[in-house]
Amino acid sequence: MTLITDVRLRRILDSRGNPTVEADVITESGGFGRAAAPSGASTGEYEAIEKPPGEAIAAAREHAVPRLVGDAYAGNQREVDSILHAADGTDDFSKIGANSAVAISMAAAKAGADVLGAPLFQHLGGAFRGENFPVPLGNVVGGGEHAADATDIQEFLAVPVGAPNVEDAVFANAAVHAAVADLLEERDVPSGKGDEGAWAPSINDEDAFELVDEAVSLVEDEVGFQIEFGLDVAAAEMYDADSETYEYESAGISRDTDEQIDYIAGLVKEYNLVYVEDPLDENDYEAFAELTDRVGDQTLICGDDLFVTNTERLTDGIAQDAANSILIKPNQIGTLTDAFDAIELATENGYDSVISHRSGETEDTTIAHLAVATDAPFIKTGAVGGERTAKLNELIRIADDAT
Ligand SMILES: C=C(OP(=O)(O)O)C(=O)O
Ligand SMILES: [Mg+2]
Image (tube, rainbow, N blue to C red; front, side, top):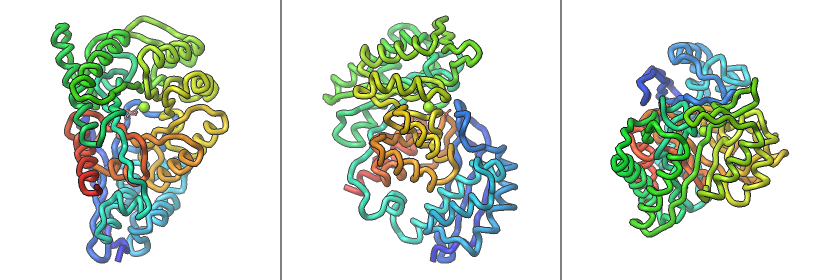
């Protein structure tokens, strides 16, 4: 029933107005799945290769589609994904593009779920998936590669750890986003938004910490449950390998690795940060390990550019105690199977998985299902904006359906 009879690929728009790959997978019994690849701006050095969409589509049509049609079963995700790997033949999807691969992989999963008549999270997670729902990390202020002339730290994330359910958590993050706007207006600070919908005022990081701290406290009082905050430092983007320093341009500060570790450890204590992503350069497992040793019992130290959803890099990180959580972005590695394997390896080793969007997104909601299917404790998918609320609203619907 899930035998794949057609795979269609096209270019569609992403949220930045750039082209991206969309895939439709159709099965023998009329099952249908559609998915689109997201795209990063602060990409990790070791990510699978995103090709220009036109080239990725042409290459996938030539090499992957003929191997899938009439041979692969959409309900057998590992088979679909291993055919994608075989059709590509490289270890970084540089032939068909990780964007074509991930769109086909996710579309196949949806087609498989369609044939079974099950929601995607149930098809992916099976009957014995856990009953928890992820806490959403909501990007409320940001800069870095996601906005010009804003904070050096890429993302300030609201974390509604005390929310009784997904719906309250999602609304709490939106309320923090709104409270930040009110505080900016009170202070006469104009602000546009970055790629993920976070406010991107022209302020330095120190001012942003005060702002987010206050916004979080205001909303916490309003909703009556605990909200903390966290960061995606995206430190690889500010690391200068020649001088071996982290350059905070808006504050005019340069920190060497020891100073960076001290700085982040100090922030964790001062602001009770519950989440810190990529606080150090993507090549520096050792510095990650030192920071994790210092504050890993108080906060999540999460590897995004460090691990790039790659089990080999995660294995190295685990061996060195480099972090205690991993960001999972299916397009960093190219298939759902690879993303699942990374989550499984993380879980076996006591690492938390944080399922994540990219800064360039579409209306695709696969990651909401992936987070629920794998019982991931956190999902990072913005706070507001259509391509972000697509996932957040899907999460609310899944919770409504499943409980
Ligand atoms: C979502 C992120 O940004 P991008 O998609 O630009 O890598 C991130 O760095 O976690
Ligand atoms: Mg990141």
